[in-house]
Amino acid sequence: MSEFPQRKFDMAPMPDKQVRLVPLTEEWIDQLIQWRSRPEAQQHQPITALSRERLHQYLQSRNPGELADLVNHDYIFIIEDEGQGEGLGWMTLEIISRLHGLARIGYTIAREYWGQGYATAAVRAIVRWLFIDTPIERIEADCSVSNPASRRVLEKCGFRYIGLKRKYLVIQGQRVDHYYFELCKNDIPV
Image 1: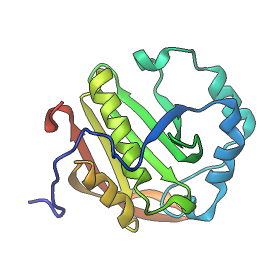
Image 2: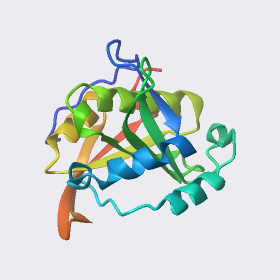
Image 3: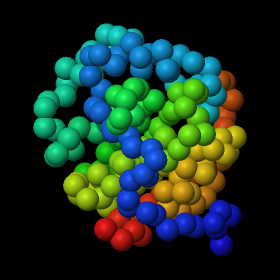
């Protein structure tokens, strides 16, 4: 029996929180570096410093249109408020196996936007895109046990609690347990 309640996933966008996931571009590099340097962003995840040069290399390794084929293994998106075009945070997508349709997501919302539904809207957006427009069949996510807000986002988006990853990641010098979640394409009505 799961430790957490299971919820049905609603494929519809959240009417009050419209977000757009924009692949990282040059104009967002400084903002991403600034977000990643904030203590609250580093509190629940093992963020390492990313230089402008490293992010420029990342961008140079990308080709227009590659998202349609998911040819690379990792992607960075900026989460934008669709109405304002304002950056709210970032989301990562790791293609674990294109052959087997496996992906992993991660997300961080800037502190000034916490508790406003943007993380839930962003997770819904990427789930919708992955399950409707790509060959992905299963999405994994995990969150620190000390981050109940992130756990609630995953639950609201229909992710199933699978178990506890004990001493999973090193965050600020300490090994931290993480909750492990999954969502499969056939778990939701498309």
